Image 1 (cartoon, helix red, strand yellow):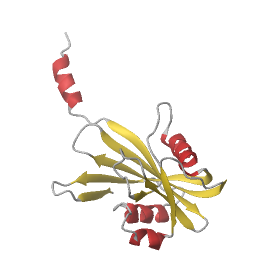
Image 2 (cartoon, helix red, strand yellow; image 1 turned 120 degrees about the vertical axis):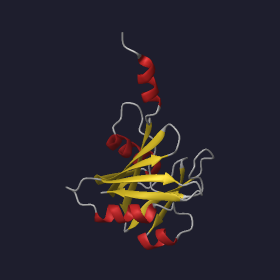
Image 3 (cartoon, helix red, strand yellow; image 1 turned 90 degrees about the horizontal axis):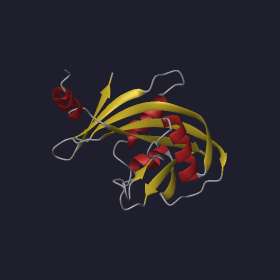
Length: 170
């Protein structure tokens, strides 16, 4: 007879992951960012790339396209996955973020209820106090990513002092 006690204990200690997307879109020489306005967002009032949850039945690529359209109204080309981030939340579930880069090829830039769109050059973004602390690194990864490259793998861990540690996995 099979024992499920040990198997359930093992499964309880395994991460469950919430898949999300994050996209950096080139638009008329700038990068499209969003300043989230939702009260329940951990990034409320901060500037980040466009993106959100992967819905049931979607793959990350489809979710990225949907989020781009919902949050910006833009159409893009060259959507490429540049990084995958495992966010160690010290709880279950954790977060798995698929980071993409893209170039706007049409559509009308339109804000959504998700937040205010902010167009910044790379230099402006890095100097902006509202920017999420990992954005400079992610922009570097997107800038150096080439079409045939595999995505870079990263792990984020929040330390006990509240600081974010970012490990780049070789």
